[in-house]
Length: 500
Image 1 (cartoon, one colour):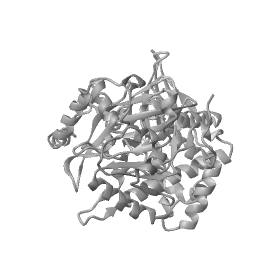
Image 2: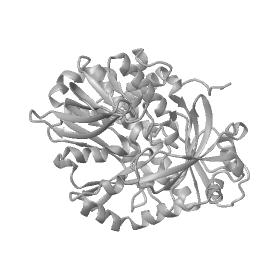
Image 3: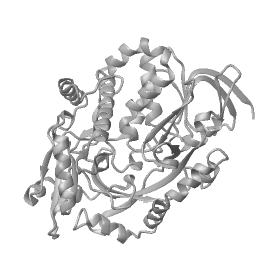
Image 4: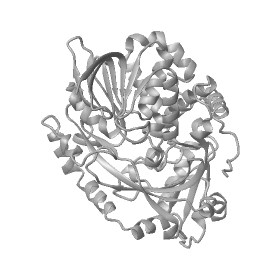
């Protein structure tokens, strides 16, 4: 087993949407830099970014009720929804730049227009949705949102959901037509094809075994070529760890102080899929409900029209579950292996705090197909068991860390970047809204890790992302202009496609 030693400028670990986005941004900002990618699997976008590993996708805070909370005085806090929507607009701008520059083609292969809706039942929830609608519809980012509690109107919007509904309790929905369905698996593969054309070296079936500092401050990455069995050593001035759930163990290997007192809590998921054309044809929207009391934010039930493999399908979920693996293709020892002297107290504190969540996940694992169908029938009263199959979703690893507000062992439900003080290495941890905000998250990595280049790069960033550094909410004319131009570039103005 001979070993190979090579030098490069940038190493990206993991061929998911985050590495694809960072690589694409850096290739525009510093075309002369040499970039290498190492991916354990045989193709790009096979883990968390894969279209079958995500039940929803296209998070723009248009319909997700957990991004708008009710304050103690009864008013609605929409700050998180604004933040996520603005971040999604950055992604739209960068994708449009790539399309307009002919760097990627056929945007309809990864993004489609689809109405985004929120649906609630019960007097209290209807009152909350109405207040939420009033708070959002006054905001330029959420223009065009409609609200209705009229069952006849709702039959027009969501016939499949309203058909056979007998409950007399109040029901209401909001609808906004400017939503999208994003296939992040397809987008990831397109971006890696583009990077390959730009001479980025992409190594599949290459598993990263270790990362350590060299005497000159670079990082040496030990890689196992799974095809030849050889061990390779690659050094780079900058390393990005974007390995989904597999990022945490690699971050721990770096030994940087920022990697201490951080743990991961793996959550597995299932969703139900309907491929029966006559059922699929009756629904055209992403419809988000409200999470049950005590359920975590990632378990908000939703019924989504999705475009996958050139056909429209219906997905319902997610049903959460517990697995000790950090990746779908991971090991049952991942969770135990991630616990060490630096984070054991953090992990134990989280274990005590999150007993209710653990109990909820175990209950979810034990659900029978019929029990899942009962949950689906709360959305589609006439759903038939034989029309729906189960798909195992990707693994999510929620970040556990000590925070000022939550104290020791606090479970985080967002996307988090951990960076070394000198910016030479960065790792992406966490889950949703993840992929939808990839451009924002990777710009944050660039700002933190390449501060000395930012002055030189800023004009190029603004060329790619015109609203960079500005609040779209405070510049409604700019938002309108950007929304129109990105919709045009990405082909979001057309009618619903007809697949043969």
